[in-house]
Length: 321
Ligand SMILES: Nc1ncnc2c1ncn2[C@@H]1O[C@H](COP(=O)(O)O)[C@@H](OP(=O)(O)O)[C@H]1O
Ligand SMILES: [Mg+2]
Ligand SMILES: [Mg+2]
Ligand SMILES: [Mg+2]
Image 1 (cartoon, rainbow, N blue to C red):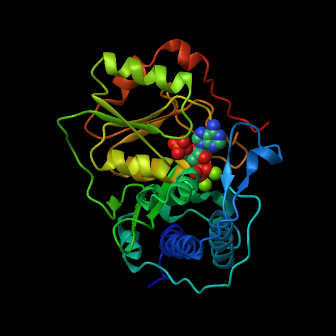
Image 2: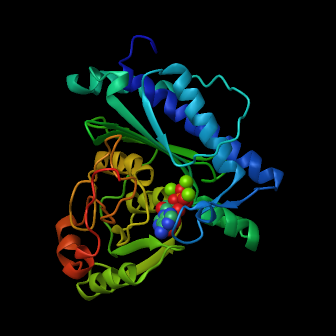
């Protein structure tokens, strides 16, 4: 069945399994207790504290090696430049994904390996991992996700969000364009408009945008949590929007989650309402910020309410410097 399925279906079926293996590696490193944290901003990464742990490095190695072994011509762009080798694992694939093959459009069925860009965030929420260990507050680990996003012609067509610390054995939420969302049931209405935003990268523009939303009853409450992946899961499970009026997050933070949110009827753009592009040569930073809304609110209301001066300070820069 696997070999008969189209390339995209096989890539997603493998990516679901690889994300779960990466989640297991993250848990093993955490259980070992020695995160070997480095601060990437010290090696010229610019910006503030930007932690990377042994879990980030091992998880990325596992994901990239496994996918490259089975799909030689795909282009993979991952967050971490430094990785740590880990034993080769025979991944297999997730059988449920193969069932999507018959639902896929012909255009997606015909996609070839060298036409996709795979955006990998091996561990999203590293700041929360560091804080969980520092404060011995393991509840924060629920905010950790593994993100694998698949882009075709510069736009997301499939996404995998693995959440290793969700309940006891973790969960994987995945979607292929036009084939629905799997792994959770999206909330379709809520009496309260809760907006989620960053815990560890707050800034003047992030706060001002949220204040503006509050005045127009588009944010009854604001929750500050970690990870782009976790915030989109919160939007899928009842929050109204994820609003991040800052240029800090990257293409690997948003490609997977945009595909999953889109499959649930939500929407993700920059804060000016522009589509985020995912070609292999784009600027890595999401310089226009991130606005992700649930299916049951009007995305345009949020765009219209964010002050123009904040948007002007977050221009879209699409080509790589
Ligand atoms: N100013 C900044 N500098 C570096 N990374 C940033 C950033 N703002 C956001 N990010 C990254 O975007 C993701 C979501 O951030 P946040 O948790 O603050 O909402 C995190 O990914 P990683 O944890 O994969 O590094 C975080 O590091
Ligand atoms: Mg990230
Ligand atoms: Mg990361
Ligand atoms: Mg990081």
